Image (cartoon, rainbow, N blue to C red; front, side, top):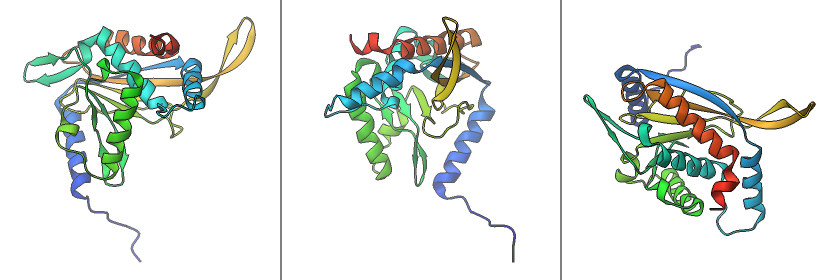
Length: 229
């Protein structure tokens, strides 16, 4: 009896493998990790869920909303890399990594920085369904300027996402992890989420990435201020 089970790549698996291999070898990738206090983020999600609203944005929707606002304030990492140039976009078109039975697909929430949280939630719900039903159009997959990959339900706290070329940056989101901190001399438990920003060192230096991921974390830690605008 053979100890080896050879699994031949499907066309989708082969395409993903080729794209990731090309990504790793075509640019200087750097990943920056930053953990933030997710207390307000998780409270906001719980409050929305309990409101009984017809549209119930997920944590991922809220992170997309926060990411798109950070991009609007600082678009330096939002765009497409070319041969010796970088096209910086002032509007965020967020590609969202979706794990389907056929493989990883990244449908795009168009104009995310111009949309409300509810509009983003509507878009992601429709795109995820089309992804699972294998009905996405080429335009719905290829037009992203920035990608988000959320492993929030996996238990993974930190990872190093691989860029989705020709985009210049990608945000990884880890799972909420119970953590302890000192508050007024007492030990308090809270949920911490780690953001993993992978960026290409060509268009920007690490300092720009550090500033950007800190901006995202700050928005998420104070998300109520943004949702109540």
